[in-house]
Image (cartoon, rainbow, N blue to C red):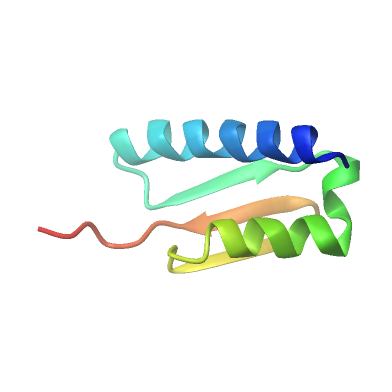
Length: 71
């Protein structure tokens, strides 16, 4: 996966997270493309979303548990 593809993937996930959060969801699940299942890409996603309660990949699906909103 190229850096541009990774940036596009992160942007896409961020937009989906925003939509889910605004809808009241506490968890976002995103099916990852095959190229994103490489260890270095998963590490980059984990680093980018480290402020979430958890960031895991399960059967090719990125699962982000949203942090509690701060008042």
